Length: 153
Image (cartoon, rainbow, N blue to C red; front, side):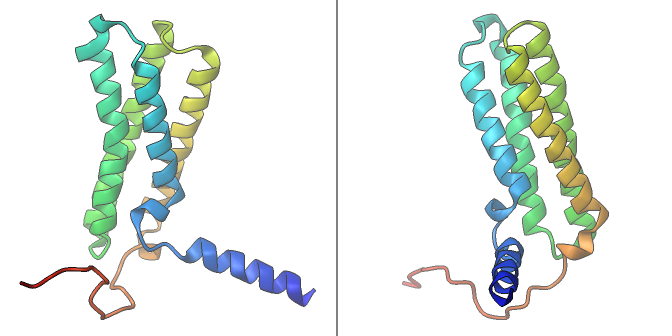
């Protein structure tokens, strides 16, 4: 029994140990999904290069970019929420482009449903973060200089 409690506590600590934006599940899911869209879109017709292909690649990548910006601005709750809102809008735009890709038969039903479901969960995760910014924002607990190697000379 005590061992189980310790195991649960360790898992809790691992979940809470978010030091970088890349540690967030919503970020990792968005990055993985964006890369899958990139791979899928390599096979799309050249006529779509400046329309659907560029747009879906841009919006799917922008989810991660805006989430990264939000993470860096988390000391300022309003800025944090604003960037999360931008990420949510990009994720929603990506879902729209996914619908077009499916309608044009560039994506099969299974791939479309999997990606659309992931982006739905990404939007949900972003909304939950926006609904409770106090869990993510505020001063850091450390006053130490971050461990960034540099040579002052």
